[in-house]
Amino acid sequence: MTPDPGRLRRRLVIEAPTELADGAGGVVRSHVAVATVWAAIEPRAGRDDVAADTAGAVLTHRIVLRAGPAITPRHRLRLGDRLFRIVALRDLDPAGRFVVVDAEERIV
Image 1 (spheres, rainbow, N blue to C red):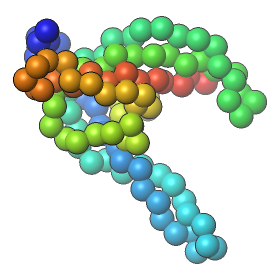
Image 2 (cartoon, rainbow, N blue to C red; image 1 turned 90 degrees about the horizontal axis):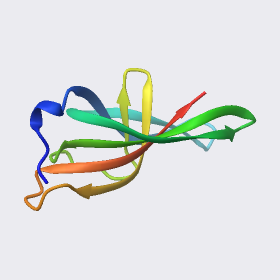
Image 3 (tube, helix red, strand yellow; image 1 turned 90 degrees about the vertical axis):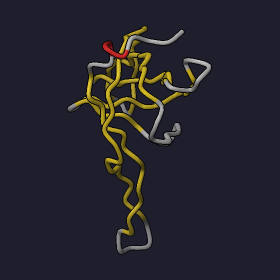
């Protein structure tokens, strides 16, 4: 099934993990923007969650984007202040023009 390209209305930033030396023998982990893509975001489900003694929720999403930049589950997606952790990736159509990203978003 090939999605309608007109549904790709959200501008997402693909961020790659990076590590910088902290000067004390350790590292500081962060993310840097590597590409900006158009995508469609479909919410799937949600559940309560507690992380680091903070109550919140985890929402799952199905994100469709054009194939192009090589992304892996180590990358993350950003939409403004919202962050999406990549759980899985798969091709949507046999031609490999679109990629489906299963992602999680933590809400605090």
